[in-house]
Figure (tube, rainbow, N blue to C red):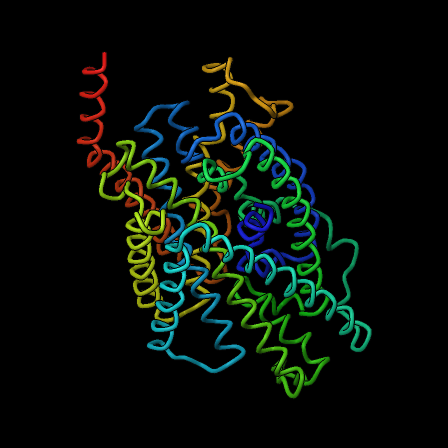
Length: 468
């Protein structure tokens, strides 16, 4: 569970986005660890140990707000995964391949992106007995990659010096808060995912709290070191959301063989080139296992919702051979493929624009679902007070206000940012449409799924009346 959570929490696709906002990103990371990460850990630990039922977030929301609200909410939560796989994760993998291996062109990006998505689908489709090794491998890849990068930054700094950082650069600002909160909070979410498969854990009421504690501390450390390393190595004007970590890694590896030209072009040779290949493979594995880890939980929760009548019964069946929601997995892969192909063609292969719009959409889709999931704790305390709670979140009202308020703020600033992302400069209409239209489609799918689940709900009512 600890490695699984590490794989879901430590997203390699957002490290560059934090560093792109300068040293104050580290300060806001610490602040949000206190006012969001910690309360969020308390909240999900209470819910996960009090209601250790297959389906996790769907079940909590259903008990608190009813099946319709939970069903639509779960579709938002589930569909954020194919949007993520076909969006930011695929483009990070493709961009990494191009930076360290060879350019692909628009057609090559399509092929590489689709290959990335369907390898992920196969990994999620494997039984939990086999599939659990994917996030474990992903966690090790993160620890080795980020640890090696941080160590190499030290070697690079000793040999070449670092970018000067003044004390004023660390002063938190309102503009920095607005820009960083969405990405930082997105880095901090995922604690609820193991609860989607609670009934397959050994003693979840002990496993969940300790896994959350260990993974939370490790995630904070694994983010902080690389972000500081990027700031010390890459000039601030050259840090971009998509390529920040990739460019920094390539520049740092020149200490093992290679050079940086006056125009900033990096060439790796000898051991530097060999290590660059290994790190590139590690980064691609890292982003792939991020998507797979989220999918293992989100897809299972969606299958539970469909089996419960909040979606088509066809998607609520688990594979008799693998014990996984194979039908939901395949549908997710198809949707992710559509996202990839559509986005690549609409942006003309502009990776930075694709990455910016995709990341914002994934975060807002996920966070809208949290607007119901997080308040579930308070509602269930009032509605089901006699349920045993092995762990009770302290300051429950404050915990709920902080977590729900911050995700609500994030959704607003992502849909209508005070300042447009650089990739969409002067294109507010295009940016707004890139967020609002997909969100409306996703919500519409949620209501459609609920309508398609009516036969299951009718059978449930008939069975209940007959039993009575």
